[in-house]
Image (tube, rainbow, N blue to C red; front, side, top):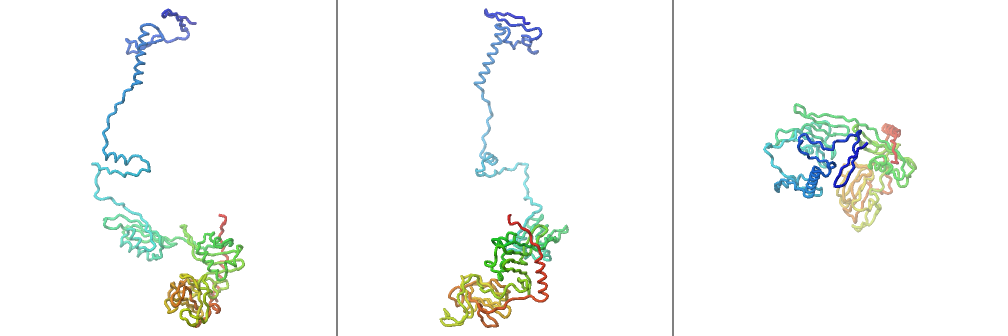
Length: 492
């Protein structure tokens, strides 16, 4: 298949097989480019070994390797044009826009001078309208909040006149928000005109004031639907009546009112056990906008060792709690006008420690620290509040059935003449004014103008509902009994 070819090189003989006729090979001579037909550059070093042409090819290869080696080990530097040095102001400008660690203190922004394309404004432009919220402070007024927000005096006067026919702005509580929109003004020396105003005037009312196209302010009422259904809760006393009642979400003041209302009939430390039950009906309002408002206690019931139920009722212009039979919850007077005080001196003739002689002691004394609150022992009207000789600061209260109580040696008077007070209301504080050897309360009770012993005299101070008023009271009490309490999970 192969035809060998024998070639001689310096006495050595090599045999190279010839290609088969069936497998054609390319010509041993290189192909020359069309544009370089007279120059033989490419030499096949595998052919014609030892010839002049072969040695020229070997020399060309050696030269190319030498050039490549020289360039690889001795590279020429790349020439870069020199940049001009930056001025200090240019370096500062670059520093303001460079990326630096957050811990590095900022250098501030550099001021760049405007170019010729920048046109200076005669005055800075103003926003066409401003939206702001004015809030009433603890010691503030509706008009004052508007003026502080930038509303002109003329607009404030117009708004006050418009809303006066719909609500009393004096009833707004601190923190109430008034949303305002102030429009564009024609002159910077003038305040912005009021475009619109909106605020919650009451729990069931929102007022809006808008400026019409004619420039007049117009008030609009937005009635808010309110559900006035009372809140009814019932549960077991458990480990703590206070905590069990608070678990329903009742405010602490409502729970305190419940305990205070039942206190004249129930000793909570002795008569109440964990197995007893309680029920309360409380004023409650829920607006369609989602807000809720909890009012006062209406109905109170305690079931167990002592079954007691009370209903709040307005009698002779005063709101009180009455028992199921129509009698007032408070039977007679509170025994001690000072909670936790020590009984220090009784009623009758005694030796006066200051006057140094025997003298009638027309009342009883309760020793307590100066400043301890003093309570009215029964509902009534204050007929005197001021300085009264040796009694020092004194308060006198007239009650039903011709009974008058006096509270003397007070350090502070917390009531005024003509004021209506209820049983347990604070009317002053324990002191040592007048003929007194130390802080205490001198307490007297007078019936038909004569002093009696408060610790032994029978004091018939208890109101009773009668006739049609009693019938209305019992009807309302039955309605309270039929109300279903809400459900609450104590595991949450």
